[in-house]
Length: 167
Image (cartoon, rainbow, N blue to C red; front, side):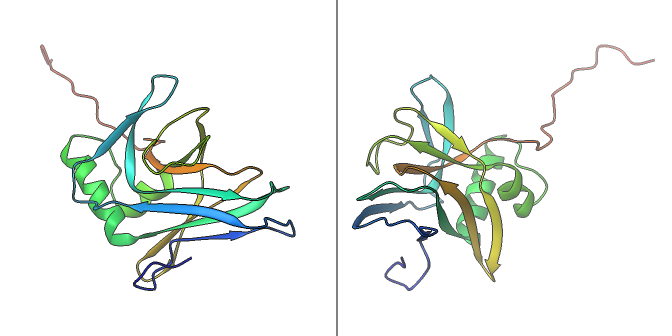
């Protein structure tokens, strides 16, 4: 699927399965806008990325590969916005999307219910596929909402220390 500018938004490889008619939606937010946060049903807060999707095929599958696409610029703006709020995001953009980007898979079909029922966190394979396009790739056996979330992963986050004395 491409947007009105011909930019890739998502693709699905059914890997030999039959998906039938597929209903989908995509929400692309302005990365410079206020950072979105949401709580899941377990009470965990998460920073929500600039894109989220729902995908609902007619039939389920034995394992389809989903590819979600982002522009490098929108991820850079999101990373910089998190950094400006004191969030540890790593030393560069590649570390940010390789280490800290996750896809939250939740039940339902909604572009506004970000972290709804039964959240499952997916650690996608993140690849820069063209000059300014980053692809998140993962395999699923069922479909629903897919929400980009920030998870600090292994990024080094400085711990504030106040020295009382030094010898």
